[in-house]
Image 1 (cartoon, rainbow over the protein chains, first blue to last red):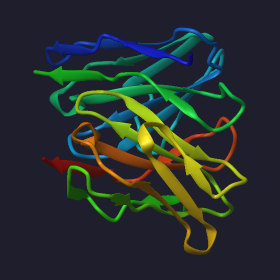
Image 2 (cartoon, one colour):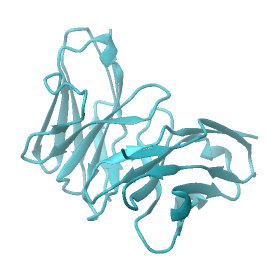
Image 3 (cartoon, helix red, strand yellow):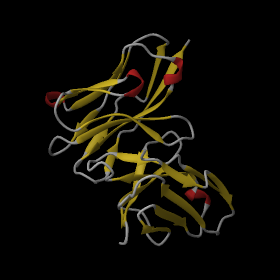
Image 4 (tube, rainbow over the protein chains, first blue to last red):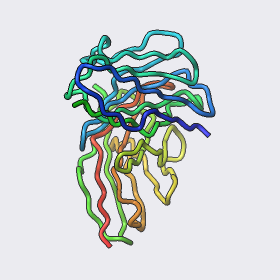
Length: 116
Length: 113
């Protein structure tokens, strides 16, 4: 149980285009989802916390107009990278929390974004 | 400020040798503590977690970790490493239920045959 999927697993796009990444909880309802960004050989950096039905809470330094997060249902959260540029190329990972009533998060497999 | 530190960026061990990965945290109170493992290009898999109670926690794949409040540490151990354990390991801490996690920098484990 507690499986999280992400789609797509890998995406290449041209500079200036927008890319949407989906994060789904497959066998449970996730009231809280988290979006992370991971640069090569670095740790995970939290971008935002997403609660179903409300606006996402962004971490300091993360542009909310560039990284649009929607959590419209208890099983789906989306991250849209708007007007992507090469510096947005990264590994994006989502996670779902609040499943067992504790702090544990269940992670998706990640999405590799490459902006040309 | 809350922080998690993994002092070792890269560790190399021989297959069959014992392993200890260090993790220190700085939090206002005892946080929830986790160890995750990440294979290249993959998401994170939970190895074990500590919330309260017994300070020696058993996890999957033969891993264990010991919470030491006096040292603000949560070190990960395995008595005999297998080649398949080669991966990156992350220690993480959280302050509240349903709350966000703070991750350490990660430790890359290389296993020599």
